[in-house]
Length: 130
Image (cartoon, rainbow, N blue to C red; front, side, top):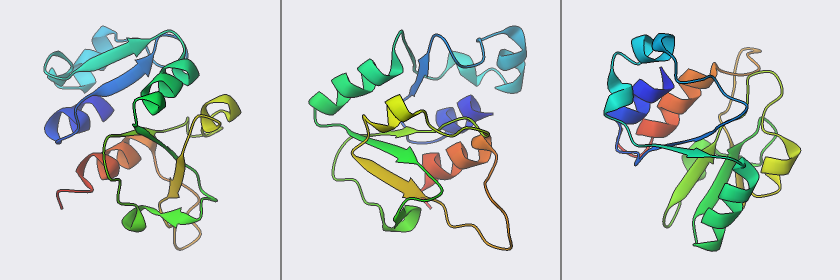
């Protein structure tokens, strides 16, 4: 579902570490409704190192954290940005968080603690077009 949202949005692509995320299997192809073949997907060996490399090229590395001070609506990147989504249980790893120049949150109401990662990805993918 994340791949489908990224493909349908103006986002340039999806960065996936080789280890630590779901393999690009037939099930993923089916869930993406075939958009896997239309989306730019970059694979990397080490997500922290790859994020550090992008940051050195003036790309803002932005992590989502429930306790961040900046809310999503107040964040206006000036150039290229990579949004880093953690897993739904642990969030973003400490090692990845250290590479970030920005942390944002999606405000939660009515006692809801977090959103599904696919929903969060869709919100981010379309936040500048809505």
